[in-house]
Amino acid sequence: MTDIIVIGGGIAGLSAAARLSADAQVTLLEMESATGYHASGRSAALIEENYGAPSVQALNRASMDHFKEGDYLTQRGLLIVAEADDCEAFKADVANMGVHPITPSEAIDFVPVLDPAKVALAAYHAPAFDIDTDRLMQDFIRTIRANGGQIVTDATVTEIRQDAHGWHIRAGGEYNAPTLVNAAGAWADLIAGIAGVTPLGIVPHRRSMARIAAPDDHDTSRWPMFFGTGESWYAKTDAGALIVSPAEEVATHPHDAFADDMTLAEGLDRYQNMVTPEVTRPLATWAGLRSFAPDRTLVLGRDPEVPEFVWCAGQGGYGFQTSPAASALLADLVTGRAPALDPQSVSELRPDRLRP
Image (cartoon, rainbow, N blue to C red; front, side, top):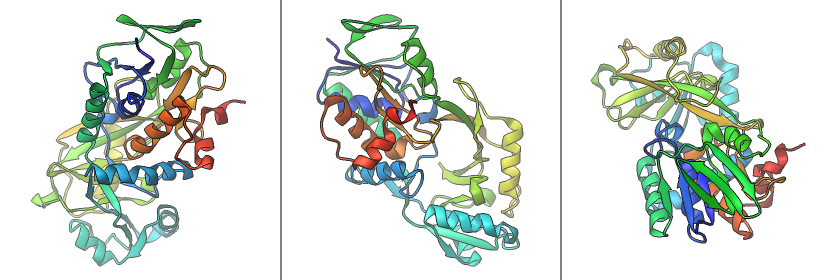
């Protein structure tokens, strides 16, 4: 018999199911034909410990041991570049992101296509790392299966009801369990509504990306991820090419996201303004949905009104970097163990904070 059903096969659901499977019989339901299809398959996949709200940063720090022990990280670095008239925005980024000012010539040493006539200000932070997201997800999948858990794909949830015997979920077949974990990403509030649980106001936001050829045939493999001020655009090496994003956040509805051509063109233009080579036609374009709670912090734990309904949502672009610690915390809260994370962060992550 299944003890816990997890809805959602992205990094949030996979990591949660893996942790919970150590103590319970777990079944994970994913509506697509494969796991990691939506936001988790479209991630920039970087961890920088100073990125996010204080509770997110606490999860980042608590995740580092798992990443290091599993050898999931590759040093990347993070670079911010700005024109002279962006001085105030640049100062704010330096203060908020823990980066350290460097000279424009040092920035160009890192990324030789930067335009020396445009780069007046620069800052760098070495401890930013690529995450091997594919292997991380596959390792969580292996843990689930090794512990006797089940992953069911092509399982779109159409009905959820609760009675004295627990949850009854129709998703092609029928699945039953005393505890339900909502790790449905952009669909988290929708799943809550189907279950008769009050939604928390989790809203998906579109972010578009384009893959372009390596500028002037440069070897980009050692370039840091580089940003415009205020995260108005970013670029990151990807399999011998570059990913460029306008880094937009456009509120939308849950769906299979696609890039907005106009927004993408604006982002590519902002990138073009800071480099010398001409941007060529994108090799590919796509978009993902980053889902945020109203306070832009993850939501982890039992619903205060329906405690058999557990939230694992609102990852908001922090899903991979927080997944080891967030899933460990979720397992602690579900099983009743004392959380390893500090009490203040736990309080800031609980769904209770979003109830009136």
